[in-house]
Amino acid sequence: MELKSDIRRKRRALVELSKSLFDRGYIAGSAGNISVRAGVDKVLATPSGACLGRLSEESLALLSLEGEQIKGPRASKETKFHLALYNNDPACGSVVHLHSTWVTLLSCRADLDTEAPIRPFTPYYVMKIGCLQVVPYYPPGDERLAEAMKAWAGQRNAFLLRNHGGIVTAGTLTKAVDLAEELEETAKLYCLLNKNNIHYLSEAEITQLRGR
Ligand SMILES: [Zn+2]
Image (cartoon, rainbow, N blue to C red; front, side, top):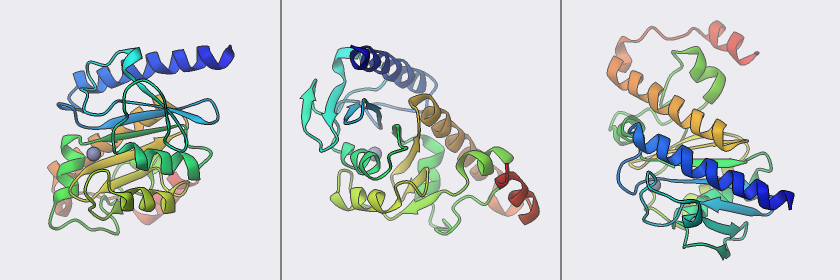
């Protein structure tokens, strides 16, 4: 009974937060996908090919952690990497994957520093994201992207997919959405500022923030 009401609450939150991201321009068309862990062994995910701004609670896919469809429409083919994260990181409660403009712009830059795609220049970037992991380009839905996520699960909470977009993970859906917004806004500032004209945080300042 408790599980049923928990899933109902998560359905509502997933619909509301997806619409909020869409309404504020973080999502366009039917791009991106979001999921949340529902109970110990299930995942609620946004459906394949749908506009995330116009979902209903019934239009969400309920899957097992093995990817079997339990209820609702088919989930996006990109849900494979969501499942890789849930299955390999018990603390992962939600995954948000967006093709938001500035994160995607950064992922497509020819001069991207793949070791440090964003050098720390704001305290919130250091405290909330810490280390943005670059993932090589794979076509959407490719098994190798899920394999890459499996290897990084639990070690990173933010990923930049080359020529594609971003992925963030957190313990809850609300925190994951906040993180996705933080990443997009940081990428926007980083690109607008031009990386050669930024007053970066010093190593000592970064160490102090990481100790918090
Ligand atoms: Zn995608």
